[in-house]
Length: 250
Image (tube, rainbow, N blue to C red):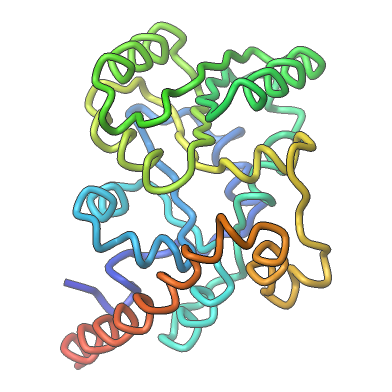
C-alpha cells in the first residue's frame, strides 16, 4: 500500500545528481548490497512484474529519471530537486576523481560494449573488470552462477549493469543475498552514451523532457513498441496510484 510520500509504491529520494554521486563515491561504502534505481515511464509499466516490483521495494535509493514521473511527483506534493537521469548519474561518476579509489565491476550486454569499457577503464587508470552477460540472464542459471562467482571474487565497490530493464534489476534482486556489499546501478544506455557508443539528445531537448521523442526518431523499431506499451499501461497505473493515495489521505 502506498504512503503519502510515495508514488507508485516507492519513495523517491529528494537528492540532486551531484548528491547521489557523492553518496556513491565519497560516503563510507555500504555494509550490505545496495541497489539504486532510476524510474521512468517504462519502469512504471514494468512494476506489474512481481519480481521487478520486489526489486524496487528492496532498493536502497530511488531517484526519478523520467520527466513525466517528476511532474507527477510534483502534482502529488513531493518536493524533489529535479531529475537524476542515468546519463547524468554515470557521467558524474565517470568524471569524478574519487572513482579511481573505487573497484568497479561492469556487466556488459555485448562484446563491443565490453571492449570499449575495458579500454576506457585502462585509459582512466581505474580498478575495473568487465564480464559479458548471456543473451537471457534471467533463464541461464549456469551463467548466473558464473557471473555471481566473478562478482564475489572481485568484491566491487560499484557494480554497473548495462543490460537494461527489467533484466538487470531482477538479476540483482534475485541474488542480493549472495552479492557482496556494494552499490549497484542499472544504467546501460548511459554507459554507452558516456563512452561514445550512443548519442544523447541535445541539451535543449533534454530540458524540455523530450528525449523520448528524439530517441524514437532515431530508433523507431526498438522503441516504438515499448513506448506504445507505456502509453497504454501508465494511465492505469496513475489512476490506481491516485486511488491508493486518496484512500490514505487524512
